[in-house]
Amino acid sequence: MNALFKYFFFTSFAIAILIFSFSEVKAQRYAFDFYESTFNFSADETLNINFDGDLSQLSVHSFYKKINESNYQNLISTLLNYKEKYKLNDWLYYQLIRKTAQQLSPKAANYNRYTLYKWFLMCKSGFDAKIAIGNDQLVFYIKNEEDISDIPFFMIDDKKYMCLNYHDYGKLFQKEATYIPVNIAVAEAKNAFSYKVTGMPNFKPENYHEKQIAFNYKHKVYHFNVKVTNEVSTIFANYPIVDFASYFNIPLSRETYQSLIPTLKENLKKMSAKKGVDYLMRFTRYAFLYEDDEKSNGKEKRFSPEQTLLNDLSDCDDRAALFFYLVKEIYNLPMIALLYPTHITMAVQFDKPVGDVVLYNGNSYSVCEPTPQKQDLKIGQLSAQLKNVPYQIVYAYSPVAIK
Image (tube, rainbow, N blue to C red; front, side):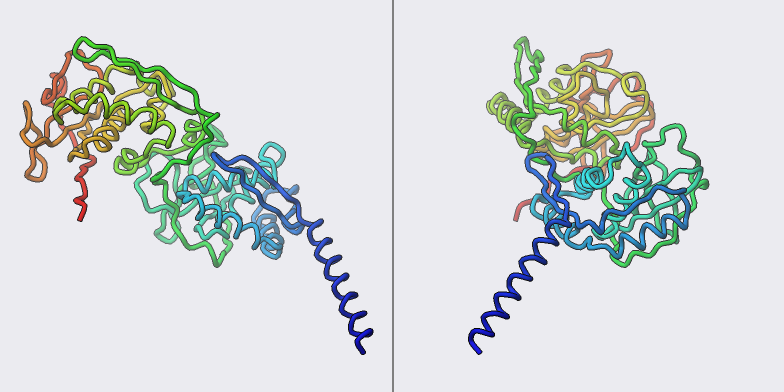
């Protein structure tokens, strides 16, 4: 009996090894750089779904049926575990999905197939994403509950879905009514997508380069060697115009922060808060060249604070965001953003207001103009061209007291 038992045991063990080895062969392994790390994943061969025919409701349903029956679960778990490990916000997670789909189905080889993989992976990751067809185009959009102003959206059952790939079609993109949603219910697809970028990835140190920035303050030239990376521009290449609260609170990456903020703090340590804010106001005003978005980008494009540091040209939106970030990080003072028809500026609440004040919710704020004007404006001075122009308070920041 012992000999027979051993025979069956070792035979079963050998068969299990063969089955495991065969299953490993069937799974294709992939790896690509993703910011500071490498994303490794394997995709079962059942995930390899063809999509070479006509684009139609029927063909999309067929693709979904096949891929939904595939062994996709391990890939989704790998993606979500990576998201959790590196604390990726939704926008950065979508960049991970894009690169994963590119590995599975290169965009240039078959755009529709690539888009369907993105859609499927986002849905199975828990996001309420939709596909629509029209004008022989495949449009991919996602549920969003935020104030996004410059990209197409669709309303389905009183829910707003923002288009994630309209930029791929450029001028060929049609009016929203052109596209008919494909009615596919995905049980996991429940969550709204957020465009809030609350944390930046830690890029590899070798991907940074030093940029020299200088400006004059009280007859002294201050020099900065700021570490910046072009990967920031890649992250925000298709980033929409979000609400000001989301926009102003996009942080710096670690390397850029460490190359700038400690130096600024050292320069400011002997100054009062008012003089320090004046220094930061003039830094954002004069350390960068001014250029209107329409001239530099052909359309409205808001730079994050790090993009403003990276680029040579910036406008009033960009400087307001950078000024806000610097004042918040170094002094953490209450601030408001004043939006005029063609300009935006900032105002800061000090212990004692300076100059002509702006009253908001019972508090006095002093205007701090971070963008070059015809006059050399001091704290508390508003440009003469704006004094009788109506404005809106589009964002108000109040420091949270630490208990």
